[in-house]
Structure formats: structure tokens, C-alpha cells
Length: 149
Image (cartoon, rainbow, N blue to C red; front, side, top):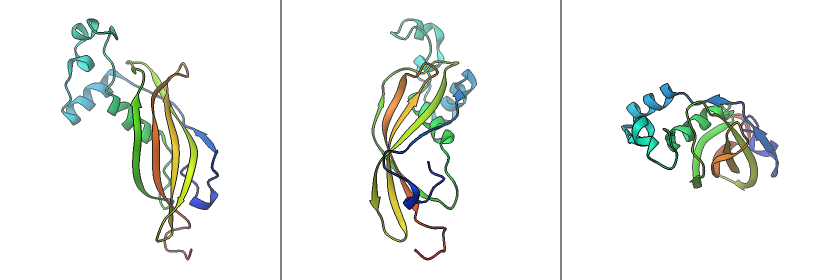
């Protein structure tokens, strides 16, 4: 979806990413980078005692992986504008494959040749279940950078 200029995006338009499998190495590396060593993510014995029964991926890791699955074309995307109402609705386990589904929900005129594209965002697993939901806002150029608008 973010390979189109602002005027090319239609409200209601949907886009689905390719998939990415979450590995134990992803979880360990994310813990090291973020400093989040909570035992639910890294301690199998502790995780057995939880309602999940086994380690789960950090929600922020899955959200970060999702940004890598989105098609952000340089020159079209001006900036990441924010996220709203993010909910972690299901766990993501080691070996789960996630995809991103975006639906353009609104467009808001911006300044300096840009506009905000608002997307309902779902990160879904290999079973089609939503694991994370929220609203994504991207500042999108109306024309190539440097072109007259």
C-alpha cells in the first residue's frame, strides 16, 4: 500500500504482506536489544506455569517485524506518523508465521505536499487469527520529492 502516492491510495483498499516466521533467535536478539528479559519470553520453565504454557514472543518484537513486512517505498513515504489503539490480542509463539493486513480507512490532507493515510492494521498468524490490531498513520508524499504539487 505504501508504494503509492497519497492521491493514488483509495479508502477501503486492502493490502496483505508476505509472511515471516518468528524464531527463538528473534526473541533472544530482541531481548538483548530492548533489555526486556521478562521470563515469559525466555524461560521455558517459567512459561510452562503461565496461561500460555510456553514462551511467547514480545508483542513489540512482533510489531517491529510487521513494520519490516510493510512496503515502504523511499520517496513515497515522508515519515512514520504514529500508531493508535494498539492491542495485543493473541500470543505469538516460536514458529508462528505472521503477515500484515492493511485497510486504508481514511485520508487526511497535510501540508508541504503530503497527506496522512490512516490504515486499520492487523497482524495475523498462519491460522488467520489476529495477534495484534491497531491503527497505523503514515505521512505520504503527494508527488515525487522535489516535484511540484
